[in-house]
Length: 262
Image 1 (tube, rainbow, N blue to C red):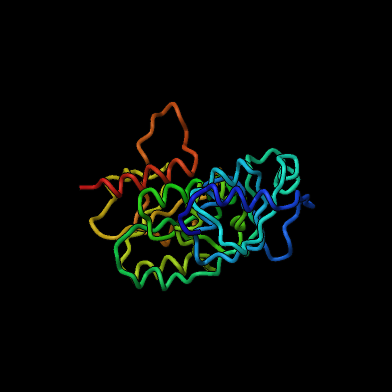
Image 2: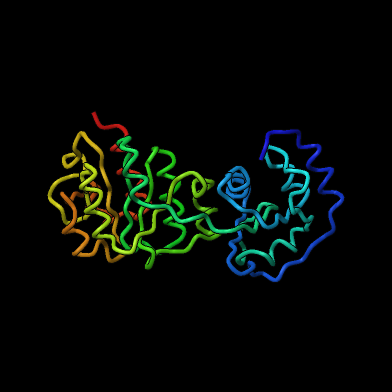
Protein backbone atom coordinates (compact mmCIF):
# COMPACT_ATOMS: atom_id res chain seq x y z
CA UNK A 1 0.00 0.00 0.00
CA UNK A 2 1.76 3.11 -1.20
CA UNK A 3 1.93 6.26 0.83
CA UNK A 4 -0.55 8.86 -0.25
CA UNK A 5 -3.19 11.35 0.78
CA UNK A 6 -6.16 9.99 2.68
CA UNK A 7 -8.51 12.39 0.93
CA UNK A 8 -8.33 10.42 -2.32
CA UNK A 9 -9.02 7.17 -0.47
CA UNK A 10 -12.19 8.63 1.05
CA UNK A 11 -13.35 9.76 -2.37
CA UNK A 12 -13.17 6.26 -3.85
CA UNK A 13 -14.87 4.81 -0.80
CA UNK A 14 -17.77 7.20 -1.21
CA UNK A 15 -18.57 5.73 -4.60
CA UNK A 16 -18.82 2.17 -3.25
CA UNK A 17 -22.11 0.46 -2.47
CA UNK A 18 -22.95 -0.64 1.07
CA UNK A 19 -22.24 -4.34 1.58
CA UNK A 20 -23.40 -7.13 3.83
CA UNK A 21 -21.59 -10.37 4.63
CA UNK A 22 -22.36 -13.92 5.64
CA UNK A 23 -19.98 -13.95 8.60
CA UNK A 24 -17.74 -16.56 6.94
CA UNK A 25 -14.62 -16.09 4.89
CA UNK A 26 -14.54 -17.54 1.38
CA UNK A 27 -13.04 -21.03 1.15
CA UNK A 28 -9.27 -20.95 1.58
CA UNK A 29 -9.32 -17.33 2.77
CA UNK A 30 -8.89 -15.65 6.15
CA UNK A 31 -10.42 -12.48 7.50
CA UNK A 32 -8.36 -9.92 9.35
CA UNK A 33 -9.73 -6.95 11.24
CA UNK A 34 -8.54 -3.90 13.14
CA UNK A 35 -6.42 -1.04 11.84
CA UNK A 36 -2.94 -2.38 12.67
CA UNK A 37 -3.63 -5.90 11.39
CA UNK A 38 -5.33 -4.73 8.20
CA UNK A 39 -2.82 -1.98 7.43
CA UNK A 40 0.12 -4.37 7.90
CA UNK A 41 -1.53 -6.95 5.62
CA UNK A 42 -2.17 -4.30 2.95
CA UNK A 43 1.50 -3.34 3.04
CA UNK A 44 2.72 -6.93 2.90
CA UNK A 45 3.73 -7.84 -0.68
CA UNK A 46 3.41 -11.54 0.24
CA UNK A 47 -0.33 -11.15 0.81
CA UNK A 48 -2.96 -11.81 -1.84
CA UNK A 49 -5.98 -9.66 -1.07
CA UNK A 50 -9.53 -10.60 -2.01
CA UNK A 51 -11.66 -7.78 -0.60
CA UNK A 52 -11.68 -4.95 1.92
CA UNK A 53 -14.87 -3.90 3.68
CA UNK A 54 -14.56 -0.56 5.42
CA UNK A 55 -16.43 2.33 6.95
CA UNK A 56 -15.44 5.84 5.93
CA UNK A 57 -13.85 6.32 9.36
CA UNK A 58 -11.93 3.07 8.99
CA UNK A 59 -10.54 4.11 5.61
CA UNK A 60 -9.61 7.50 6.98
CA UNK A 61 -7.54 5.81 9.71
CA UNK A 62 -5.30 4.00 7.20
CA UNK A 63 -1.89 5.49 6.52
CA UNK A 64 -1.74 5.43 2.74
CA UNK A 65 -3.85 5.00 -0.35
CA UNK A 66 -5.21 1.83 -1.92
CA UNK A 67 -4.49 1.04 -5.58
CA UNK A 68 -7.23 2.33 -7.92
CA UNK A 69 -8.51 -1.16 -8.75
CA UNK A 70 -8.43 -2.56 -5.19
CA UNK A 71 -11.58 -4.60 -4.34
CA UNK A 72 -13.13 -2.25 -1.80
CA UNK A 73 -16.70 -2.12 -0.49
CA UNK A 74 -18.14 0.53 1.75
CA UNK A 75 -19.88 -0.86 4.82
CA UNK A 76 -21.54 0.29 8.00
CA UNK A 77 -20.48 -0.80 11.48
CA UNK A 78 -23.40 -3.22 11.70
CA UNK A 79 -22.37 -4.81 8.40
CA UNK A 80 -18.82 -5.38 9.62
CA UNK A 81 -20.08 -6.97 12.82
CA UNK A 82 -21.53 -9.78 10.69
CA UNK A 83 -18.18 -10.37 8.99
CA UNK A 84 -16.11 -11.02 12.10
CA UNK A 85 -16.16 -12.95 15.36
CA UNK A 86 -18.69 -11.77 17.93
CA UNK A 87 -17.72 -8.47 19.55
CA UNK A 88 -14.43 -8.39 17.62
CA UNK A 89 -12.93 -4.87 17.66
CA UNK A 90 -12.82 -4.37 13.88
CA UNK A 91 -12.28 -0.56 14.02
CA UNK A 92 -14.19 -0.15 10.78
CA UNK A 93 -11.92 -2.43 8.71
CA UNK A 94 -12.25 -6.08 7.61
CA UNK A 95 -9.90 -7.58 5.03
CA UNK A 96 -10.38 -10.96 3.37
CA UNK A 97 -7.16 -12.39 1.97
CA UNK A 98 -5.29 -15.61 1.27
CA UNK A 99 -3.22 -17.18 4.06
CA UNK A 100 0.50 -16.51 3.89
CA UNK A 101 2.61 -19.06 2.04
CA UNK A 102 4.39 -21.68 4.11
CA UNK A 103 7.97 -20.91 5.10
CA UNK A 104 10.82 -23.35 5.72
CA UNK A 105 12.87 -23.52 8.89
CA UNK A 106 15.99 -24.10 6.80
CA UNK A 107 15.57 -20.68 5.19
CA UNK A 108 15.59 -18.97 8.60
CA UNK A 109 18.50 -21.02 9.91
CA UNK A 110 20.58 -20.36 6.80
CA UNK A 111 20.56 -16.60 7.44
CA UNK A 112 22.98 -17.08 10.37
CA UNK A 113 22.21 -13.61 11.72
CA UNK A 114 22.07 -14.83 15.33
CA UNK A 115 18.60 -13.48 16.09
CA UNK A 116 16.59 -15.53 18.61
CA UNK A 117 13.95 -18.10 17.74
CA UNK A 118 10.77 -18.70 19.72
CA UNK A 119 9.55 -22.31 19.75
CA UNK A 120 5.97 -22.97 20.91
CA UNK A 121 5.13 -26.49 22.07
CA UNK A 122 1.38 -26.92 21.56
CA UNK A 123 0.45 -23.35 22.50
CA UNK A 124 -3.10 -23.29 21.16
CA UNK A 125 -4.64 -20.00 22.32
CA UNK A 126 -4.65 -17.61 19.32
CA UNK A 127 -4.47 -14.58 21.62
CA UNK A 128 -1.25 -15.94 23.15
CA UNK A 129 0.28 -16.78 19.78
CA UNK A 130 -0.58 -13.31 18.52
CA UNK A 131 0.92 -11.66 21.60
CA UNK A 132 4.09 -13.75 21.21
CA UNK A 133 4.35 -12.66 17.57
CA UNK A 134 4.10 -9.05 18.74
CA UNK A 135 6.90 -9.55 21.29
CA UNK A 136 8.96 -11.37 18.67
CA UNK A 137 8.66 -8.34 16.40
CA UNK A 138 9.48 -5.94 19.23
CA UNK A 139 12.66 -7.79 20.17
CA UNK A 140 13.73 -8.68 16.62
CA UNK A 141 13.31 -12.44 16.78
CA UNK A 142 14.04 -14.33 13.58
CA UNK A 143 10.83 -16.41 13.67
CA UNK A 144 8.37 -18.33 15.78
CA UNK A 145 8.21 -22.09 15.27
CA UNK A 146 5.16 -24.27 15.96
CA UNK A 147 3.88 -27.67 14.95
CA UNK A 148 1.55 -27.69 11.99
CA UNK A 149 -0.90 -29.42 14.34
CA UNK A 150 -1.74 -28.40 17.91
CA UNK A 151 -1.31 -24.73 17.01
CA UNK A 152 -3.97 -22.22 15.98
CA UNK A 153 -4.48 -21.45 12.30
CA UNK A 154 -3.80 -18.03 10.88
CA UNK A 155 -6.83 -15.96 11.81
CA UNK A 156 -8.24 -12.56 12.60
CA UNK A 157 -7.81 -13.19 16.33
CA UNK A 158 -4.10 -14.00 15.90
CA UNK A 159 -3.58 -11.01 13.62
CA UNK A 160 -5.39 -8.58 15.93
CA UNK A 161 -3.42 -9.78 18.96
CA UNK A 162 -0.19 -9.54 16.96
CA UNK A 163 -0.94 -5.91 16.03
CA UNK A 164 0.68 -6.24 12.60
CA UNK A 165 3.47 -8.64 13.56
CA UNK A 166 1.80 -11.55 11.74
CA UNK A 167 2.94 -9.88 8.52
CA UNK A 168 6.54 -9.25 9.58
CA UNK A 169 7.63 -12.17 11.78
CA UNK A 170 8.05 -15.49 9.95
CA UNK A 171 5.80 -18.22 11.36
CA UNK A 172 7.36 -21.61 10.67
CA UNK A 173 5.13 -24.67 10.98
CA UNK A 174 6.89 -28.03 11.24
CA UNK A 175 5.68 -31.63 11.42
CA UNK A 176 8.06 -32.72 14.19
CA UNK A 177 9.11 -30.19 16.81
CA UNK A 178 11.84 -32.41 18.26
CA UNK A 179 13.45 -32.74 14.83
CA UNK A 180 13.20 -28.99 14.33
CA UNK A 181 15.05 -28.47 17.61
CA UNK A 182 17.79 -30.80 16.38
CA UNK A 183 18.11 -28.69 13.23
CA UNK A 184 18.43 -25.58 15.38
CA UNK A 185 21.23 -27.19 17.37
CA UNK A 186 23.02 -28.13 14.16
CA UNK A 187 22.75 -24.48 13.09
CA UNK A 188 24.44 -23.33 16.31
CA UNK A 189 21.44 -22.42 18.47
CA UNK A 190 21.45 -23.03 22.23
CA UNK A 191 17.98 -24.33 23.11
CA UNK A 192 16.55 -23.17 26.45
CA UNK A 193 13.21 -24.51 27.63
CA UNK A 194 11.29 -22.45 30.17
CA UNK A 195 10.18 -24.65 33.07
CA UNK A 196 9.06 -23.48 36.49
CA UNK A 197 10.72 -26.43 38.25
CA UNK A 198 14.19 -25.76 36.79
CA UNK A 199 17.02 -24.89 39.18
CA UNK A 200 18.83 -22.37 36.98
CA UNK A 201 17.33 -18.99 36.17
CA UNK A 202 16.98 -17.92 32.57
CA UNK A 203 19.74 -15.35 32.96
CA UNK A 204 22.11 -18.01 34.31
CA UNK A 205 21.34 -20.32 31.40
CA UNK A 206 21.85 -17.71 28.69
CA UNK A 207 24.90 -18.23 26.46
CA UNK A 208 26.58 -15.59 24.33
CA UNK A 209 25.49 -17.09 21.00
CA UNK A 210 22.15 -17.64 19.23
CA UNK A 211 19.26 -18.80 21.43
CA UNK A 212 16.05 -20.71 20.75
CA UNK A 213 13.53 -20.17 23.57
CA UNK A 214 11.09 -23.07 24.01
CA UNK A 215 7.72 -22.32 25.60
CA UNK A 216 5.27 -25.01 26.68
CA UNK A 217 1.50 -25.17 26.38
CA UNK A 218 -0.84 -23.16 28.57
CA UNK A 219 -1.36 -25.09 31.79
CA UNK A 220 0.45 -28.30 30.86
CA UNK A 221 3.83 -26.82 30.06
CA UNK A 222 6.47 -28.33 27.83
CA UNK A 223 6.20 -31.98 26.83
CA UNK A 224 8.88 -34.35 28.13
CA UNK A 225 10.21 -35.25 24.69
CA UNK A 226 10.55 -31.58 23.75
CA UNK A 227 12.34 -30.83 27.02
CA UNK A 228 14.81 -33.63 26.28
CA UNK A 229 15.74 -31.82 23.06
CA UNK A 230 16.68 -28.66 24.96
CA UNK A 231 20.26 -27.91 25.99
CA UNK A 232 19.06 -26.41 29.27
CA UNK A 233 15.90 -25.86 31.26
CA UNK A 234 15.52 -22.57 33.08
CA UNK A 235 12.96 -20.64 35.09
CA UNK A 236 12.01 -17.02 35.37
CA UNK A 237 12.66 -15.77 38.94
CA UNK A 238 9.10 -14.75 39.79
CA UNK A 239 7.68 -14.26 43.28
CA UNK A 240 6.40 -17.24 45.27
CA UNK A 241 3.09 -15.40 45.43
CA UNK A 242 2.48 -16.35 41.80
CA UNK A 243 2.74 -19.93 40.54
CA UNK A 244 3.40 -19.08 36.90
CA UNK A 245 3.12 -16.47 34.15
CA UNK A 246 0.98 -16.45 31.06
CA UNK A 247 2.98 -18.00 28.23
CA UNK A 248 2.97 -14.79 26.19
CA UNK A 249 4.28 -12.78 29.17
CA UNK A 250 6.99 -15.37 29.78
CA UNK A 251 8.01 -15.20 26.13
CA UNK A 252 8.25 -11.40 26.23
CA UNK A 253 10.44 -11.48 29.36
CA UNK A 254 12.74 -14.11 27.87
CA UNK A 255 13.14 -12.13 24.64
CA UNK A 256 13.89 -8.98 26.64
CA UNK A 257 16.54 -10.86 28.63
CA UNK A 258 18.17 -12.03 25.40
CA UNK A 259 18.11 -8.53 23.92
CA UNK A 260 19.70 -6.96 27.00
CA UNK A 261 22.26 -9.63 27.98
CA UNK A 262 25.80 -8.41 28.48
